[in-house]
Length: 66
Image (tube, rainbow, N blue to C red; front, side, top):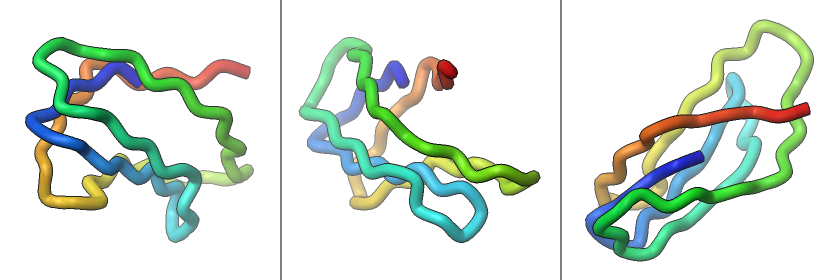
């Protein structure tokens, strides 16, 4: 994930009703890359990126690798 934020951002990635991972960033004036090992569930569950606190963040791209 490539992201920037106005403060320390806590980010959660959900798949359906299942929390997949929690990520965090510092206060970034430019985009930074965050990597995390996650295990996705089989099925047609939608992916959601949620703010876990009230700090706004901007995602430039989001990528999964096998």
